[in-house]
Image 1 (spheres, rainbow, N blue to C red):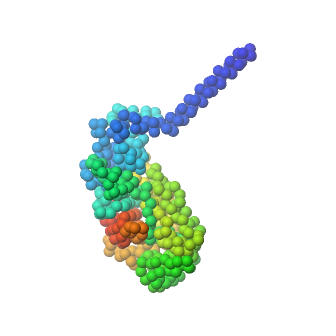
Image 2 (cartoon, one colour):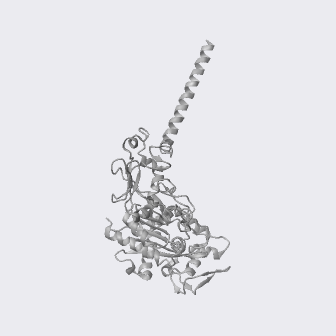
Image 3 (spheres, rainbow, N blue to C red):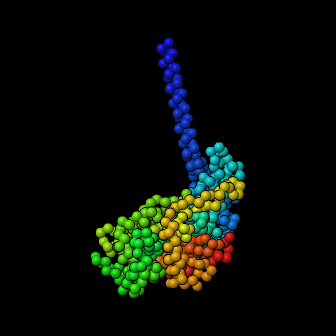
Length: 455
């Protein structure tokens, strides 16, 4: 009897272990099945490590950017378009890690836990992906940057849809340069600078300092600052880009007065500046939907007033990720709600599927957002000139970011406040000089296209 009980106990234990093993395998299959199915060893999808069979990728207007034909991946007919959308679409080897081909390879394969990639095996194509970007706008943005490297992004601030996203340098996937990995002209070519780069922001960082001032200095609007061309901090000095004389808070932002904003930064102190920056996403790992972003860094000095002043005006060690900062611009334009920029419109085997819900990346006090919106509008009407942005009702801030040993980066961030054109833009043009030059002109060029073609 005892032997029978012991044997039964052993059998039950084995059954439990077996079921536990099955459960572990099932969980692993559910969690990792798509990765296993889309591994580069799968010859239904890859050939020599490159994608040959996958779903079609189109832009928001249905223009095909990549598709599979006869066991081969085929890209758009236009070389200009191929270069302009390279970093969004991605390459077939996954070297551009944030490209759609790599990040959404499971979706493009048509994988599901019930059928795996059966549809791909049968038809040679998986699930389609429609992007939010307008490939014509990307081409225009790419050309508007001219000979300068950098990035330009346009986003609908009410929905988070990315309508344009360009990164330079680029190359034509149909004719890959032989010296792609050795020629200095292609340095950083595999990096999508919109999401994976971080730049010294220059004076667009004054937007963050202004937000902190609005919330922490009750009489900030009645203060008068005097700019003589430099501001003595007590342990050094901050140099201005001009001699602005006596100016108020709004004028200081419009004139981009380093003296005024260094003084404001020092009055606020490192802790308050850091708290505002953190509340807006600095020093945190963020994602634009499924796309990971490089962390924006802000570390204002607690020991040096001079370094604190430089940090508050966008120099020192301050660095920003373009897509993250665009979400902050979204928040200002959208009454405090900064939607996460999203490249995907839809994914599905047949046409569109359920629309994607917008996600919030940053939040801002609505009163602060309203004040900043008024100030950024004054930047345009009082400094840059509405004539530079015909029909846009633009709110904006330029930046000129100094880089050791190199020409300054031209920076522009802003948005149209037209109800019919709820678009925000950010542009970094490397070594292009003043923010009111290349970055501003390129941004306006793309927005003018949308003014005529956006619905």
